[in-house]
View 1 (spheres, rainbow, N blue to C red):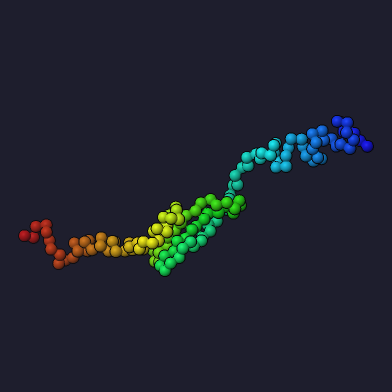
View 2 (cartoon, rainbow, N blue to C red; view 1 turned 60 degrees about the horizontal axis):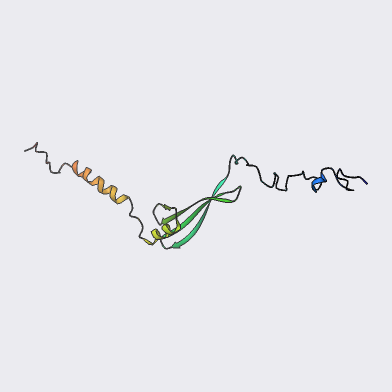
Length: 138
């Protein structure tokens, strides 16, 4: 029978601290001294995936939650809420309560109506039968 340096029979080298074979003195199971992990370098290319979930749906309008999830660590990076009216671009909100409040209101007015009104005065000025107010033909 072999004796350890402390004089106990059956010991293995390095067992004076009561550690088992393969464990180095003050190193713990988590890989660092006293269980602290060293800072790891960030992943060079983390894959972010957008996950779409319908929160609320009514005729003509839907409130949608889009979560950005890091696929490597399964953590949520960010959340955005969208109000989608039929036939309109989605409206983006940071909070669910704001998106739900906007969904209760009527849909936005299409942008085509103001652009037609802006073009009408230009067309009227170029018409041959339009009244001339410059005073040159008096």
